[in-house]
Image 1: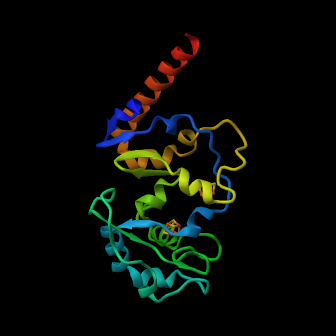
Image 2 (image 1 turned 45 degrees about the vertical axis):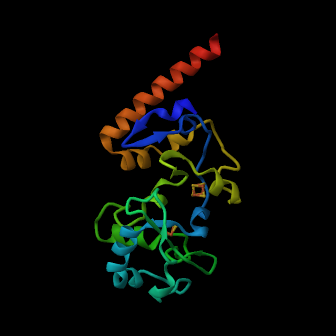
Length: 194
Ligand code: SF4
Ligand code: SF4
């Protein structure tokens, strides 16, 4: 996997992110399994639990003891610990009956960035970070019924998720990613010709 030796923001980059065809057109079934948050994200969410409850509907539980699993060690998370969100009514506890994330709704209602309260791995999907590599979350995509099962055009996952990539890597990181993409595509075109 020599292509992944390229590192940006200390993460190896899986070059499949430049080429996989992907279309995001469903109603958010990616939230049906919950998400792993970093321990620090879990703590930040619990600090604003009362405001979160105000935005919940009757398909959600306001019992915050039912919101998260126990923390577990995971070196892919900044703090070294991951905390999974629980499911309620077959969906992440933070997903409302309209298919909207309560954390995102709250941030927007307060005039903050829409992803201000959202766990990083929610923003990243269909990408993920696994063993220090920025890659595609094939495992989660596979188990979903609609996600990328019927891509409508030739867009790549990279094209579909530019906003998320820019947000995650920052402007300088995204510039490096774009540079790597151009190098990768040009090298592979050269290989195709030979
Ligand atoms: S990432 Fe996949 S599951 Fe999530 S909204 Fe897009 S198509 Fe649907
Ligand atoms: S926290 Fe929000 S975006 Fe993340 S899985 Fe739950 S509902 Fe979806």
